[in-house]
Image (cartoon, rainbow over all chains, first blue to last red; front, side, top):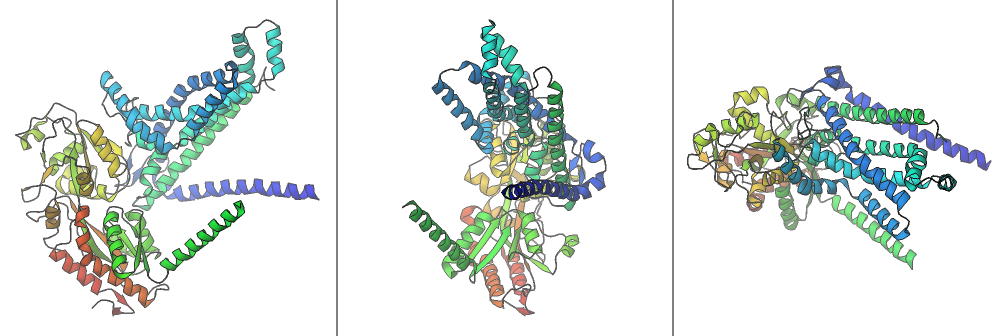
Length: 290
Length: 348
């Protein structure tokens, strides 16, 4: 009796989530229909986004989103993995570990608007100097600034997932490896990391999801230009940053609908990234699977 | 002990909520819309509350939101920086009227070494934002400023990334003075910018301009004044160099004024007028008996509007908004007098 009630409750809760997601998707599809009908497939590959002539193509924003997230990952992965390995494998003193944990947690809980402000005050002037050194237009804002701050924002997630993953490696495995005469480095790279790699990968995916959808900080740093970015110093826009900038004051219905379309694209990209990652992960499950 | 404190907080909260509904009840009006006049409205409504005890709640959610709310009849009045186009009137369930309240201006600000005073024409500003003039020592800029030593520095145009009435008025001006701008870019709350960098809100644009040597941006006059930014004098359609000031902005509305007050002040033909001046309006229904509105509510609204264009005007200049000049005031008066309840005028 109790069991049945419990199951019903669980089933209901699960259904609610399914319904919320379905309703969400439905709203986005229906509301984006006017713009998609008007533009056809060009909504995906068109590079003009003009509220005056009401022509809307999402390509510059799709590229901006993928570019900033990819660069952020490239910057964040080595840093987070090393930080995670240090915390999970090399720090034995519990108080140093707790200080590091606290710092990472604090970094993870900073609101993104604060990252944006910090980016404007610190990162943009630095990137501007760099741009002048290499002869690029000295905007300061742009793809690189946004990606750098994005990277810093996702490092806490990635590094704590890495740390957790390493700490879940069974002690027996390590002890056996040490007993066989392996060095610490060999144990880390040969035993612990391969064992933990699926969880580490999951952490990277989570971070990618966050980077793709991050709005506030990116909007403040990317320069908000509707052009396809051609270099690290180019100004750009991401799907999320355009929605944040233009949704409130969208003057025409097609404009509003086109932004619903952008939200749909963002959702699909995020889902594809997750799906792609999971399939990679299950392929990777071989020798060190379970 | 602990539970006591919690329940005390709950009681306080309940009292607060009850108090709030009391305030929003009989003696209150609700409006929403344009953020550009919001500081002036806040000040006016505060003074109005002191004088009459009527509370006016204005939510600054942007012009599009204000128009949407008046369309849906969920507010007493909407605020908008752009007037409703003829084609859009059919979206409203009944006739709406525009009442101009204050006048503002968009100013061109810049960051140059030595902080020189610049003179610019609409054409040159358009060409800068089109990406055609890319250096400060370009001949077109130099010719207008023979007494200024202009540096060989890249011009970096900065624009508003968020949709805004400021952008609407700025691009309306550029469209009025440059045929190329009109055909290539056009005029709207947000446009497809051919060059430059975007930043959010007045504060964002001002921030980028302050940070970046060689940049040029456009912000509201109030914002530029309060942050003492360098501001360009603009040549108006009568060939006069005009600095943006409360007088020159007010003067822009002193020319011929249409009865329905729907007029763009940009590129004004008033001789002393600053060419990028802009009205902002309050939008209400002409016939106030709709939904469950009481005669009292309609009366309160009409009284408020009348007060805003008369007594209320003296509170706005300290906030860098210009007051309505005589022709605009007369038109506004006539419109308020045309507002009715069951066909009866509310103000005589």
